[in-house]
Amino acid sequence: MKECSKIKAVVFDVGGVLQLNKKGKSKKGIQETFAKNFNLNLDDYLDSIDALYAKSMEGLISKKELLNSLSKNLNFSEKKIEEIYIKEYKKKFKENKELLKIAKKLKKRGFKISILSDQWSLSEEPLIPKSFHKIFSPVIVSCDVKVRKPNKKIYLLLLNKLKLSPGEILFVDNRAWNLSPAKYLGIKTILFLNNKLFRKQLKEFLIDL
Ligand SMILES: [Mg+2]
Image (cartoon, rainbow, N blue to C red; front, side):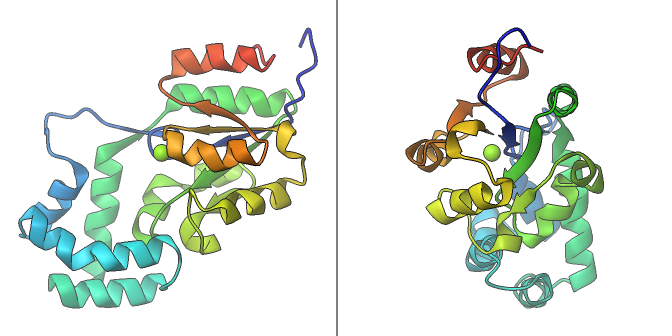
């Protein structure tokens, strides 16, 4: 690095950042795909899962409790439900290989690289695979830490775990509303749109890869 960046850690969101939506043949959204798997129309499916999804996102119910309730609501076995979600999440998302390369480069350069992500128990495993845990640390996931973005508490937890001051952290998310609380705390932010633009945005923080 020619000039020394103040940034010491880069924190990545997962959905829409480290994992991208596959533009497959099917124009269907992921919720419609789930509904179809459970032989329901979209409204009925959403009604069956809404409250449970929200609770699981914030870790208010365990995965076991979630599967148990879903099994009753959807009339499928717990095992089958878990299989369907894992299969469909893996089908609908693809790892952002280019961004993962950038993250690894950052790590080589001495930056800490971390994950801050909202997931419910059924998307955590397919979208944050073991390979991510090998590269990123800490990996903070809403259903594990019992709080989700944009609640200020999850950003405070991040600061705590990274043991850095807010100005030394760069947070990357594809949703503006998730960046606001971070900015408020003094964390530097990048609104992620695509990999090409991200490289440019990194340069603004004196990070030239
Ligand atoms: Mg996202």
